Image (cartoon, rainbow, N blue to C red):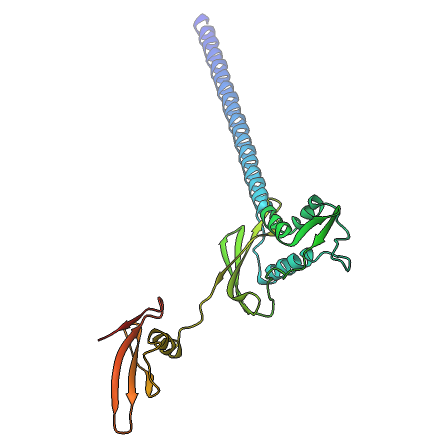
Length: 265
């Protein structure tokens, strides 16, 4: 009887111990699941925050980057440059709406660089009896919208509009209007430069150069004629016409780039 009672107690103890172990394992499993869930949520929050920061950075970069400068916008900017320069004056060329050089320079710098504004002020205006006066001289060279041009991108904030112009006043020139973007992404004219353009060299030009080279040597019966091209140079034949024959006086080579005349004899 005593043996049976002892066995029952032992069995009960084993059952209780097994139940406690299972409960502990269940609690540990639940804790592991909770920890994994919290870790997953934390990672998701960090990922979302990182994505938001990236999006904010992209938005800031997009907002600070100027729009591409189109031909239409470039034309508008250069026409506005001329309009800004042409300030209202009296019949005596006294500037009306600006009393000081500083005021007029501030007006100019709304569409152009400080250096370009100073160039216009120094070249076309002067102080006279406490007034600003527009000098009676030729206007600067302006962009001509009716003429062909090319718009070239140096980088996203700098463009060059290049245009060839020919006039009696300025001659045959190629103008480069440099347009840049400010920090607030608005566009302005940074600089205007020009260079002379040589007219295309022709056979007639070569003959005239040889004629000048032989000035005082050519008689009434002497003639000059283009003969051929050799290695990019013009070959001019100089000869004398008589009633009975044609006599060669000389052959001359003309370099179209240096305009140098060289005798081939």
